[in-house]
Structure formats: structure tokens, C-alpha cells
Image (cartoon, rainbow, N blue to C red; front, top):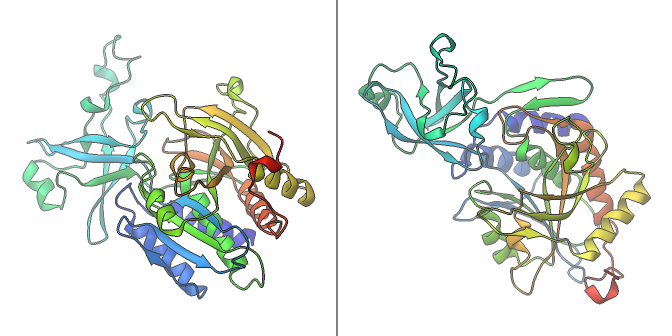
Length: 367
């Protein structure tokens, strides 16, 4: 399993797929699911869904992992051929200058560029410690005119992402682009592989969602169609084991999967998720029985699609379950492949515990 999971993770990390432009990622995942003999559906937003039928008397379970990544959109082509951009998603401005980027210009074609960084020799003392606002940044693709850029396929609205990259690190750790959330997409492919021939258990919906980085839009439509009883969101958890993050919590890279106990964005989108007590108990018991170390996270500043999915229909019992990740939303996010394997094992163990005695009645739990 581990070799296959690792290969899927790395393959998905190398496919550009800005929010709203997830087609290449979706087509890759669809092909993998079809190779397993699983049928898929794609809705008008672009969410990819597959259903693994189960016992209809048990609560149905929807898993979500988002296919999209954050990035930039061309907003202006200067006469010189330089490109001005808008951010799409929570792109950190201080991590942008001097980054290599990839532009998708249609029909599978891509172009490389560099986010300009003013020459050090011409930088004033006042500029040396200043983060340049994204509105003032520009991308250099080597063009000498706007006409040349247009002829190459660049136009207003062209999607841009960090240049896809994978860096092998010590042990089982890797760095690279779009670990958020391609690692979780790989986990869902592994779940599909494990569940496709099972004989019992709840109905499982695997949703590979779109536009999560664009205000969590995609999964809502999927949930409205599928009407699940349970939703388990797979995404990253902020690792807090670096010198700059220790005050935020106690989530360690390589120490196993993470259960979200509280999330709240706190700015802009005033939303978050408090997990359903049945799901907290389920994950705790599954981890304990399987000998999996389960970490906990409570944080402000990030949120997932469960923030909205929990409100669909009569309400959905939601929980965020995650893998630890460092340096999120940068061009080089870091995860531990061993955490991805442990998270997969946890999810399979949790599914195996959803039987006729499993209750979603909140009054059956002491909160």
C-alpha cells in the first residue's frame, strides 16, 4: 500500500490545477478510479464523485479531498510583456518574490515564468525589509512585448501556480507543491482501492472537490446531491513543531494523523467546524484499537469544507481528519509520507466500526 500511496501523492503534486482549473487533476484521478472498475460522476462545478455501495441501514459516509491549489490569475499584460496578477486563494505575499511559476495556456500547454525580485544591487535600505504587495509584483516569462505574450497563449485570466516540484528529504519526508491537498486525494484513491471489493459496511462517497481554495465552494454542491449522514474532510493540519509555531499547539510531523477539535477562520469568512461527538469518539476508538497515535488540533486562521457541509439538509455529522504539514500555502510544503499511511489506516479502521450499534444521536454522548 505504502509504495502505491506515495506514488499517487507525488504524481498528483506534479499536476497543475488552480482553483477553477482542476481539469488535469480530475482526469488523472478519474482514470485511476476507472482502472479500479469504479464508475464516476462529475457535476457542473467539476467535483468528481464515486460511490461504493454498502448497507443502506447504516449512516452513509462522504469523504472529501480537494483537487485544487491556490495561485494567481493574470489581470494585466504590460506593453513590455510583463504580467500583473491577482491572487486566487490565500497566497502569502512574502513567499512570492523570486519564485518560479507555471502558466497553463490551454490545450495542455504550459509556460514557465519568474516572479520578479528587484535586483539586490539596486535595492534601497528601506526596501530590503519590505514585503512587496502582490499588486506591485510582476511575472517575467521572457516576453519582449504584450503581442508576444498574447501570441504565446497568455491572456487576462490565465491561471498560474507555483512550478510543480518535489524535494526528497530525510527519512519519509518530502517537500513540494500542492501537498495541500493532493496528499489527501492520494489517500482517497487508496481508500477506493481498499474498499472496492468489500462485502459489508456503510455506503461510502469519495468526493474530489473543486474550488476549496476559492472560499470552499465545490463540496457544498456534492453534499446537496449526495445527502450524506457523515462527512469526513481530509486535509492538512498545521504542524507546530518548528521554532516559529510552538505556541500554536502540539502537532508534530511524523507523529501520526490529526483530529480537528476546533477550527475558525477568524477573518473574512467567519466560519469553522466543531466536530460531532460521535465522530470524535469513533476516531479515538479506532486509533486506540489500531495502535495509531492520534494527535489533536484546535486552531484559528484556517477552515475546511466541513464548515459548510455540516449545514446541508438536516445537518451532517462532520469531522476534519488530517495529516501534519509545515510551511502551508508556500511553494514548498512539507509532509511525512508515514503520516499519510497512518491516516489511511485510521480511516479504514473507523469505517469498520460503523455498524448497527453506531449512533449519531448527540444525546447518546456526553459532551
